[in-house]
Image (tube, rainbow, N blue to C red):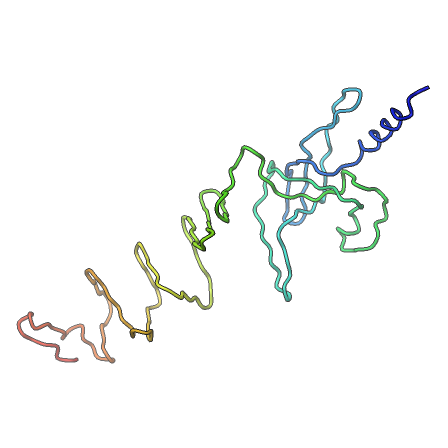
Length: 231
């Protein structure tokens, strides 16, 4: 007579063979809504045969997302074929939920291979995380936020589109400052002061003071003793 405990263990193992919890996978394709994902670890059967896992279609990808007062917030990264993901398998069938319904599913299956969520991940050995700062990186571009509150980003080119921009504090520009629609300043605790240490090359325009052209008549005492005739 077979050992009842052995028979029970065999039955449990047989049932668990079709229960999925978490598996590594890789992207086959992604359209920004659903992904097709392939689990990357095959199953070995009791007879030694290897069962290659099938592709899973209509896999929702997990991104940080929220909706505050109707303003949707979403953070994503590009996904291409071969990118690694973590597959988490749902305790209920997902078809109804994927179609926008929250009712009970029509299929009683649980932890099935077809009911997966995908979360992008880093495969160990391919990249190293920054262990000191909050970090965002994409190719050669990086953004670092330190525990002290310092923000540093390195990019080849950056563009800001805004209706109004404000910098509260001193601003240092280590490079050429170029503007296209003029420069204007007023107020401040010390008044509107511009200090330039170096040469000033004024071209293609009129230099005025209180609406008067001083570009042609302005002279200094050491320029032959002629003072400004307009100011």
